[in-house]
Picture 1: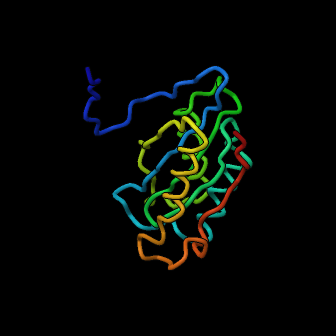
Picture 2: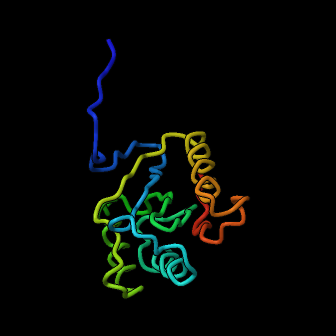
Picture 3: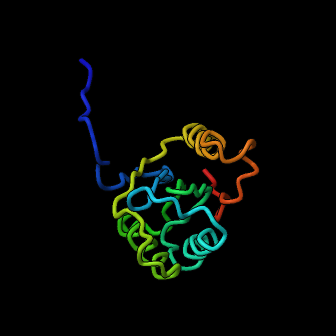
Length: 154
């Protein structure tokens, strides 16, 4: 008997914690109306500053900032802070910091729990090539709006 999964237009809410396993989340956050304003030095600095100095209940590892969305990986340092609350917090701090009221992030996001180092590495390879697939650079390493805030150790 095959298990049927619902056709989802939105992600299921909440993050499942598994005893003895790291809780690593891959997430995508888009701009409102898919407006293309994220990929610049000022925004890049503001996002990394929020992730590294203010929103530290979950730690951000590798990330890629595209013109209209952000991909990143994060993991819990404090499981008492629900993931969805943390995402809303960093988005709020980022919006306040960059101070451009007409340029907003969507209120929702699309998160997926990584279940193994192999799935994490596979997903990172896909994310890293995103600027190349979009025709923004020839070599993914040339994209200036990517990096790693904290080193994820499985």
